Length: 205
Ligand SMILES: [Mg+2]
Image 1 (cartoon, rainbow, N blue to C red):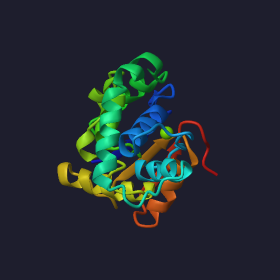
Image 2 (cartoon, helix red, strand yellow):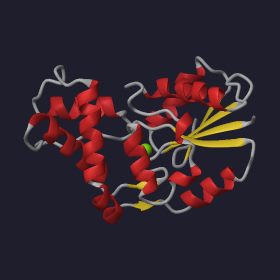
Image 3 (cartoon, rainbow, N blue to C red):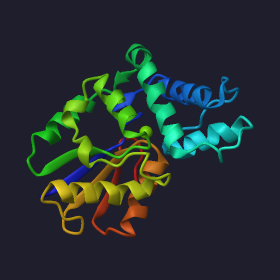
């Protein structure tokens, strides 16, 4: 096959203009019944960790909140804030061009590795017309694990099921904007030696 490119979403392909944090605040309100005083901490964390963080930072016990409940709240928040995202956010410069470039190469698969649950990743990319370049069926999403590096083998296994892709022979490239994106590469490489990690903003050392 060749290369599996796993793009991060927020601040790699799109600028969300603060709407991601608004989504977590709204999800908190849906789950708890009032607005949070303290905002979510995001920066490459997965949705499970972000929700647990905003709950505990606001004095709420994350224990009773089920995965199913939080994912439903996040999905609803992402849908309700879609117009706000269109208003405040934008595709990052060069994102469409880069995706188009790799999409034209038959040896490359474009997908995503993101802490977002899948429906919210789809909403974020489709709002800016970037969803057409990405195969969501093979991606790694925040509902799969709280640990970002765990999403790499998930995406690789999905890709092996759908394409002629061998995670030991072929190459997996992560592209992201935070140290957590960077760390997911070496962490996953402990399991999968062919993984490499690149960043749009940071230089691996
Ligand atoms: Mg990001």
